Each structure stands twice: as C-alpha cells, then as structure tokens.
Image (cartoon, rainbow, N blue to C red; front, side, top):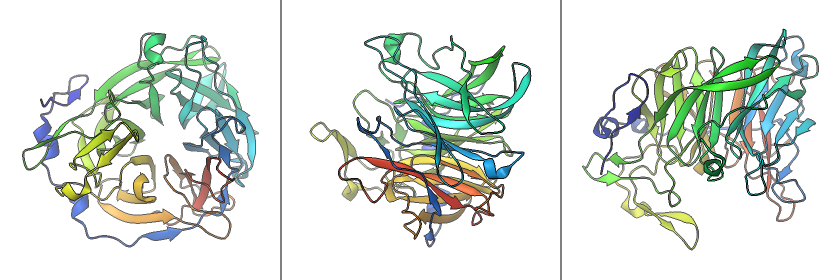
Length: 413
C-alpha cells in the first residue's frame, strides 16, 4: 500500500506519484570523464578491532583558525573510537573517547557525524563548537574548540535529551541520531538511523554548557510508484527503513540536501530551522527500481541487475557524504568509489571525480563523509577537501583499516 510523503509543520502531504514519475535530468546527461585527483596528506590508519580501540573513521569537519590558518584543524569521528583532531599535515593531536554506556545492558557512545558551529556565546566568551551525533546514545554532543590550539573540551550539558527516542530501551534499538550538519541560527540538521526520518534542532546555551531542543521533523518516502505503474521499495535489513546519513544545508540557497542511501539525493527548502516545502529528487541511485531481496545467509541484499527497468541515475548506492563549497555541491557515490558534483543553484551536473592513489597517499574507497573549505590554507592554496577512506592501504594484515585523505580543492568551481 502506498502512503503519502509526510511533511511536518504546515506543509502538505505529497502523493508519491508526484515524486517518483518525474524525469531524472541528471541521468539524462552524457557520461562525463572522471577527473582523477591524488591526495597530498593522509591521517594515520584507524583499526576497528580490539587492539585499535574499535576505531572506524567516518566523517570529517574542517575548522579554519581565523587568527592563524596554519593552525586550522580537521576534526573527525571514529565511531566507537570517539573523535580525532588532526593538523594540516594529518598528524593526530587529540583523541577523545565516547561516553560510557549509562547501564550494563545499554549502548555506549558511538560518534557518527561532526560539523562546526561558529561564534557561540558560551560562559561569557565566544567560541566555535564541534557538534557531534552520538548514534550509540541518541544524543548530540558539543566540544568547544580552543582558539589557540584547536583542541577540544567537552561542553555538553549533563542532561541533554535523546534526539529521537523517549526511553533508553528505545535507544538500545539504535534508531538514533546519525547524520549531522550545522547551519544558520545555531541549528542542526540530523538524520535518524534505520529510518527515512530527519529532524532539525536548535542549540540551547545553559551557562557554560550546551544542550538542544527539537524544532521540526520530516519523513522521506519508503515506498515508491515507478513510471511503469509498479510499486518498489529499496531492500533493507528486516525491520529497517531506507535511511538517510549524509545531510548538508546550503545556506546561500536555503536548501537542505538529504542522502537517502539506497534511494536518491533529495533537496528540500529550509527556512528558520524548519522544512519549508516539498522534497524533490536531485538524482536517484543507479539501483532505483531494481528488484532486490534480503539474503539471511549473507545478511546482504541481493540485487537482480538483470531486471533493471532503467529508472535510476548515475550514483552507485550508497549515496553518502555531502559537502558544499564555492558554486558546487559534492556527493559521494560510495558504490563505485567516485564523487559527483552539481551546481548549487540549478543542481545541474558539473563533474565527476575520484580520489586515486598518488605518490604521497593512497586514494579513497567507499567514502562515507566529506568536508570542504574554499579558504586557502598552508599546503592547500585552492582550499581543502577532506574525504573518508574506507579501505586504507597498504593493509596491516587482516585488520580493518580506515582514515582520511586531504586534497587541494582548487578544482572545484
């Protein structure tokens, strides 16, 4: 049974047919040559095993030091491994652990996404913050950035609420805070794991501590009517919905972009921290509309590519990390280790690139998160693009190995 798209606030529900039968303009463009870029810096390998502290690189943010650009920092999540702070040479300066589990049968902290909130008045001073989604405990956490060193201090209020759930038992099901982006007015855009939900929150200052309150909520579709009249739903783990992870707000156009991993890249207007219109697809994933079934033996979705009806776009699922700089929206096409770019205002496709092995570092595979600044920094005269690498090489035996690659961003228009 088809259900309408749910929109919060005063927006109206949109029938699925209006969203799924429209042409996909990005897919209609001729294939573009892939521009191959090489990183000049990489961070130390993180290992998702006991010896490595269960550290798994995921999402970066870039803090530009206004007084001394050479002391700018890359702040990144490592899931169960907490947060890492790196200098512009990729050297680790600080590691911050996640919060402990509140009870013996509860989930401990697991940091997923991070972004920078600038110019917050806190305890009589103005500071920049690193805001983090804690998917283990369904909370948002905050770290003050020292203006001199770029190191972090936890300033999260002791009584911060759950972001999406109401009880600890619900939190332990792990439908929790997932993707995160900071935007104007002290707002945060946050997605919810294992669901098609996203929400907005506003930062609340409590003396010298930081909390938040919910502002708005939106649920993207989970089922679709295809142009041929048939119904389709993306394959997910049993009981889960088609989740969003990557999120970003383009403050120039006041548009929120939502990466629904197995479905599409969406855009929706956003005003004063609230969703202000109907979501529309920028580009669907290549697998959109293809039959797939969950295989219990492999715990994976088996996709029947031979039955492809041809309704998808170019992005190979998952559609993942999103970031905006200059005139460009950058989108990670995780399934083929590449990135697509789009014009920020028209959403017209503008390029296709990959971060590949070079003399100083290997490339990026299975990219989750990405961040970019157009500000010229030492070693990066065209600005800095940081991307996650889900398969760092050379491998250390059979140990899972991930890290982050730094690329000059001068190629972005």
